[in-house]
Each structure stands twice: as C-alpha cells, then as structure tokens.
Length: 237
Image (cartoon, rainbow, N blue to C red; front, top):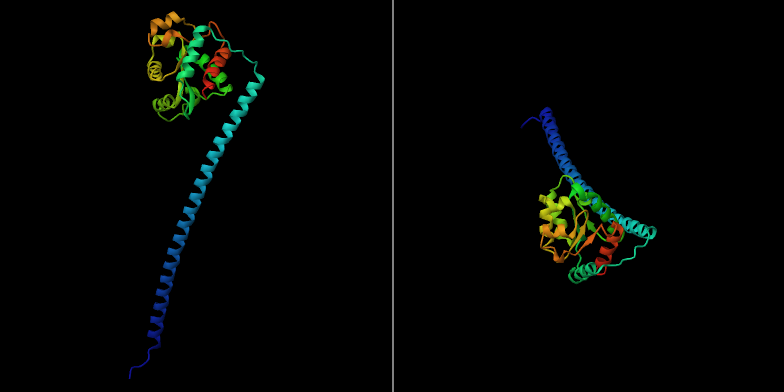
C-alpha cells in the first residue's frame, strides 16, 4: 500500500492554484482589453458625431450671421437707383435669359488680375455679397495647403455665371486670367466690368465678348455697378 506524501500533494496543489490564477488573470486581461477597445470605439464615434454636429452648427451659424450682416448692410447703405443704358439693358436681358436657375453653390465667379484689379474685385465682392449674392473670390475662398487650381476649378464649375474685371493687366494676358476667362466663356453668361480700359481696348483684346456689352467704372461707381449686376442676377435666383 502506497504511503500518502503530504509534501508532494501540497506541491501539486500549489501548482494547480498557480495555473488557475494565471488562467484567470489571462481571461481578466482579455476581457479588459475588449472592454477598453469597445470604450475607445464608443468614444471615437461620439467624438466624430460631436465634430460633425459642431461643423454643421458652425456652417449654419456662419450662414445666419452672413445673412444678418447682409441685411444690416442693406439697411444702412444708401439705396442705389438702378438705371441701365440701352447697351447695359441688352446685357441684362441676355443675363436673365441665359442664367441657369439651379442649386449651384455660387451665383458668380469673379475673375480679375491681381496686379491692378484687386481693389475693384474686393469692393465689388463686398457690395454684391451685401446685396445677397454668393460670389467666389480667390482671396476669400482659396484655402492654404490645398491645390489652388482645383479650388479655382471648383469655383468655376459651381458658379452660375461669371463677372470679369477687365483692367490693363487683364487685357495684357496672364496665365491665370486667360485660363479663367477661357472657362467662363463656356458659360452662357459672362458680365464684363471695365476699369481703366475702354470698350475699344476690349475689342482689340477679344472678339468673343458678346457685343462688348458691360459695365464700366468710367460711368458708374462700384456700388452702382454691383446694384445693376444684382438686379439682373437676383431676378433669376
């Protein structure tokens, strides 16, 4: 008959206990990792939802603020009486007949030569925006770190019409202005605004501009020109 060995029994018991403890710890660790991964997923999803909500809220707030600013500007600015010359009226009639009525992102794409047209373009943008139009202007819309040409193509594609600030530098022909004008001339509606150039200068520059109709700062100031453009465009908005 075998003799009971208490020491051996206790050794095996301790081994079994240690193995059971290690297995329990492994299971607990695995469960904790799953819980931590689940919590991270829940937190990340929540953060994404919060970020999306904040972006939508910011966009909505910016739109509301912009509308309030436009109304305030319209309320405080002197009213401009719009009177068209016969040539301008022909252009307005053509704009109203050709301007697409759709949900494009911008009403107008503003093309200009920065060397001598920036001040006019920025003032025209401010006046048109205050009158309720959405106008693409590079100094406002271009975001650093992204492709400039793609952003410009985006603006050209999503604008219902184009307004071209024709200045001596523009007529001299520069890469960006030539490219923009080429794209705008594929639209049904291009609105020329002449500054320090004449219709004769434009005729020598391009025979494509329909009938050389347009607005000129030699006859009207920028608020008056903006009011004329807005009156034509907003009738179709």
